[in-house]
Length: 265
View (cartoon, rainbow, N blue to C red):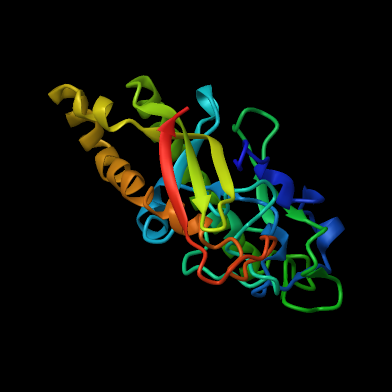
């Protein structure tokens, strides 16, 4: 999603391959505070369980179409620009989405989700064979506690993924999601238009029957909807990061501010 459209999220993975004792028996992974690998993604998927954490500082919207609609957290308003990662690769926000915290690991599936294979991005600069960081396998070829914790994290992520898909299906079935765009006018008169995202239509939400609202309440969806709507106020503050020292932005006056006009697409 950008001042124009949506970025492929898995582009942060350069060379994801299945983890195995044969290929990675001596592999170590050093995780640090460098998020340079996320410098060129302006949004990443967000799980339902993360809404409360993310909505405090980011805009939470929806992207995709049909059965592939997912919640995403907005990290920038232009293509290939993450305004939360600074020029040194540091994360300048408080909350780091789980999608990025699981990197360089990811589950893959080639049988419609019946089975999953743990993969690691060998292109990640923290992957090494000189013992820096955490080993995946010990000298006997057994999984280390670190690898077990990685598997546990990704399994929990997958559970949340299914819960999140349930949320978006219910919102879609009720016709609550509407294509939106936001127009930002910076103080230097530069105009940016962000499109390619969906948001809950407040009027359609108010028009739901008591039975439909009760179903949303039963799944704890109403709280998530309100968190999403509340978070939309961060659209402007995200745009205001342009020129304020974040990576990739054009330099502009230090007192630059943005005004935002959200409209239906």
